[in-house]
Every structure is written in C-alpha cells, then in structure tokens.
Image (tube, rainbow, N blue to C red; front, side, top):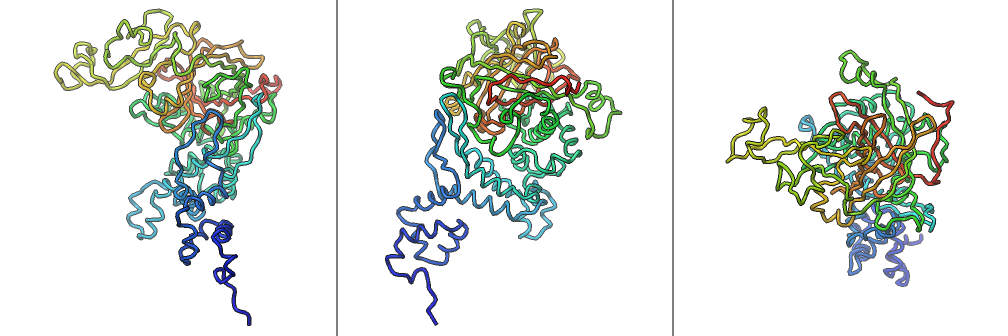
Length: 552
C-alpha cells in the first residue's frame, strides 16, 4: 500500500511559504481557521511578520477592495484586514445559522431559556448583522465617462449579499416584514436596501401594514422633524429604518403599479436593489455642467413620485374614530414629477437663507449683526410663512408667556421650558424653500461636516400635462453624524407651502434615491403627510404620464 500523502510531507520546493499561502487562499476563511488551529506550520504561514498580507489577500478574494474610492471621495483610514474579515465572516455564519424567531429584541422571557439558547437568541445578532449594510457601503465604485454616464462594474460585495439573501427562507429570517413583531432595526435596514422581497410583491397585508405606518399622522411630529427619523437627540436627524422600510414598500408597490404609464426608460424607472444601493451609482453631470464640491451629486435632473391618500380617507383613518380597521385596500394617488436642481452654494449658506433657531447667546431675539441669519422672533410680514420648532432653552423668566409661568422651578430668574422658535420666512413665492436653510450645525460644523459640507440648492418641479406649471423649490443636503445623507426641501403647491425630509437609502450618490416624507410647512393640527421618492435621471429625459392611464 502506498503511504498516505500529506501536505507537509511533500518535497520542500512544494512546501515553500508561497505555495502554502496559495493553497490556503483557495479555502474558505472558516476552513483556514480550522487548518491553522490544527497545524503549527500552517499557522506560521498566516501569523508572521507579514500577517497583513494573508488577511488582506483573503479579504480581496471574497470582497471588493475597500481602499478604492470614487474621484473626490475621502480615502478610508488604515484598514485592519484581520478584523474586517472576521467581522464579515462572523456575520455570514450567524446569518446562515439563525432561525427567524432569533432576530428579536431583548425580552424578559429569555431569562427562562437555557444558557446556550439565551446566548443564541439575545440581540447579539443585531451587532453582528450590522456589518452587512456596511459591506454594501464599501462596495466597488462603478466607472464614469466624461459625459457622466455610469460604466457598470461587478461588485463582489453585492454578490456576497445576494447569495446570502437568495433563498426565500433566508429573506424571511433576515429581512422579515412589517408583519414581524419585535423586529430588530437592523432587519428593517437590510430590508430597506434590499428592496421588495418576493413576499412583499404579492402580500396585500404587508402593503396594508406599511401604509398604516406611513399614513398614521401621530408618527410624525416635532421630535422626528416630521420625517423618517428617530426621536431627535440634541437636534440630530437619525434614520428611522422601520419607517423607511414601510415607505420603501408603499412606494415600491405604487411604482410597480404605475410604471406602465410613465414614459421612462428601464434605467430611469425607480427601483431599490442591492446594486442600486451602492454609493456613487447615480449619473454624474458631464464635466462642463458639474459643480466642484457637489459631493452628493445634487446638480442635474431628478424624478420624483409623490403618494397620498384622499384627505377624507386620511381623516377617517386617523381621527374619525369610525374609520377602516386596515389599509390593505386603500386607494392612493401617485404623481410623477421632473425636478431640475442647481447647486446654489456649498458650505456657505445663501444670502437669503433663514435660520431654524436663534443663537444660544440671545434666545429672546437675534442681535443686529446676526439679523441676516437669525430673523426676528415674530413674523414681520403678513405674507410670511411660520413654523414652530421646540427645544429646551434657558430664558429670562419675565419673557415667558403667562400661561407657561410657574411651570418650572425658579433658578435665579431663569426657567427651563420647551422654547418655541417662531421662524420668519419671507413669502415662499419669492423665496421658495427658505425653511431651515441655516441650522446650528452650519455655525459649528463637525469633523464629518467639514469633509462633506452642506449643499444648498434651488430648482423647479414640473408634473405631467394635467398638472399646474413649474413649481419652485429649494433645499439642502447634509451629511449626518452617522454617515447618513439627509435631504430637506420646501416648495409651494396648490396654495400651500410644503416641506420634505428624507434619507438617501444607499449612501452618497446612490441610484436607489431618497425616501422622503412630505408634510405641510405650517404643520397645522390634522394636516396631511405622506411618502415620496426622489431618484436621479440617467437619461436626462422629461418624465411624462400617459393620459389614458391616470388614476385620479
């Protein structure tokens, strides 16, 4: 009998480190770990003075190179290749092994489970699976021609995620749906960037539950900036992925129902997919029209759909007390618009911008030097639009309205109350979109904001042939502290001023676009709100709807 061959018993020229390295790189990282645990020789190949080489090689065999960035994009800091690979493979192994009921928030009932089961069920999965959206953000950037056309490029990161989520059972486990109780936010985020699942497309109840969340007016208010954000902490807007998930389902289903009547190319039709949620996948402006420093790619033509319920139906659902029990069969209007946006300034607020708050040093009114940026505390024009923002501030006790006096303990003439900021916004017909053009972050930009300064823009919005003519709009794009791309716009339509707040779901310049909540600028009691979706055109054509397909 022949002696069994062994890798390390081969001739020396075949066991050189280069040969062993190449052999290990053919294995899955999990198998590499098993090998180096069982063999000291193989361990020395992985762990030596050139340790980074092997870990980097294993990362680049399975994933895109995270060091590659789009033109003008900040280069990432030094990469810990071993930690990067371990976190991603750990997330994969957890995703492949858990059951649908395992991705849950912490529950007192877990204390009654055996220790080994508790460790498996506890929200450890949230932290582990949080790596998956980051894999998408680190995916390969596509190429771009001088005319701004995107050159497709395969992404190993996208392939990794698609394989992980390919099976319907895995989709149910990791993504779930708004029907799933006590879901972790990471599931909602994964679902939002993945797009409509097979079940989302056919289930009336999933669509109904998503509508119920989106069209329930108590879900919007001061704390969430009337947008898809978590309750504000220190004025920061952080995405509410559960709300964004419901918006994606509502708008995604509406787009599927309406696309046949839109004169859009296949590339211009709206869709949320893993590939479109990659950063820097939206069309760039040709060099002659590009604006230097426009890191969000605002300049150019965009499309927008706005969805809303008939106000009588909205009233019945929210306030009548005798409305429908569910919105599975609710009727929505879906309107398609073309937006042409131009960058006004970057990092420096426009001259006619207004503030969303008075400076802390003068809570009862702005100084003369600040008057251009911090308007008076009460409207000075009968044509002004106003809005109230609340935060806690220390004000002189004698300045407190009579109905509020005594609500707090006296502290040396100062009292802490919810401070009402009345914003003076010049007539929106002349200055559309003045709302919140300047915020406290403009005065004290963070380190992240210095890399991605605020972009201020203006533009026009036009609908199909049955709509009123061009509507003016203005807005801004900010980079959030958590890396989210935040949009804010105002416009005037049908005699009302409107504000839109949203998040670009795939990151910077993602072709998936921006999921937005629209609402009245004044935010009067019983005012309407609803979902909207913006995405950048790839063909630069004007969007139109066929008259014979109109659903209203």
